[in-house]
Length: 195
Image (cartoon, rainbow, N blue to C red; front, side, top):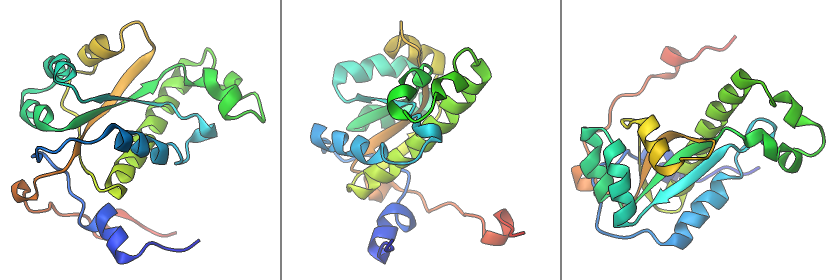
């Protein structure tokens, strides 16, 4: 497998930032579809793929989202061209006969609440990270965040389903002039060891 060039690594990692201010430039629906089509290719446990994404783009949908946001996240979310609700389907295992057909993987989860919750959360979080990388690779900026009332958001967007929110990710074209200096990161030896 070949490696990415430095420009690609800059786009995905070195120069990528978490944005809170946005240019007034819409994100086309076709690009939202492309993000998902890339993100879905990342690995998950038994290909379980529990992530579900709701793209909040219209003014009406943003107003529905607003009451679930912490005060500090309202302005930036209302200004973002799109907000992705990265959620998890707690019934993901029902799709395993299709997604992982070579064994009875559904039986690993059916009736096992702890396994369902752990697997859905871990793998939807992984898929959310793939989502961010996919968006960046397509020229978009991201502003992933917590800072919202999961229960309230789930009542607004997922009532009557077994889908639960994980985190939010504002996406669009960030206003780089409003970025703060990059925060420090650990050196390898501070966070890693080789045994």
